Length: 259
Image 1 (tube, helix red, strand yellow):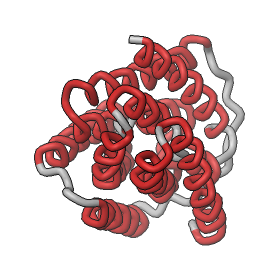
Image 2 (tube, one colour):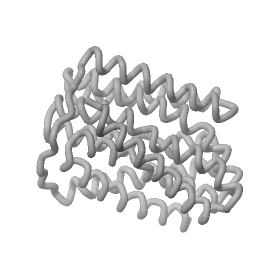
Image 3 (spheres, helix red, strand yellow):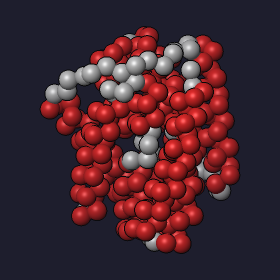
Image 4 (cartoon, rainbow, N blue to C red):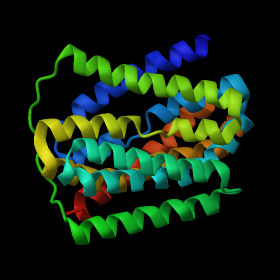
């Protein structure tokens, strides 16, 4: 129970802070910040404490394939956003659940296969969005937030991560990995951006987020190696350092070539 409560609190604080910051910095920077490892850090840490480091390594194998589903989620949301928010949210989440169930039913047995699935999803969705919609990067806008909006983000994301810890203990590493990368941040951010700044900003942000999702995959790959070797706490710290190194390079690439 303590692990669930702590994971809820940590995820709530992180998600609330990161989404507020990202929405004010534009689609290039904001989309990258949103996709920095956050909820997966908390989920894997408490999975490791509760279930063991090798459990985390097994769960990490599923993450790249599941992040491929998240890339498709973003592409569907962007493509349907011109038909209204309800259609975009419903279509994107329905697609995600179908793909998540597929990954859960037929999980990749080893990391290279999972990475191939992820890479294919990112490449296809990125090319498709660029050719069909080609939303250009936009500057951010200063947004005034209400306490209710901030609380909603925190409770929503925190609830998902708490569910991931419970699901991991009840359903095994595959189900735990699926919940650890549920697009809670993506969903809440895209809804708020759409309502605040409209379809163009949402589409541009979504394109960057698809590319930035490599940050979470890098964290999962590092975790699969470092957790069994160094334990949950030290493994978390080392994995954060390794993924941040990757993220720095990815950020430079996105800033330079994404247009």
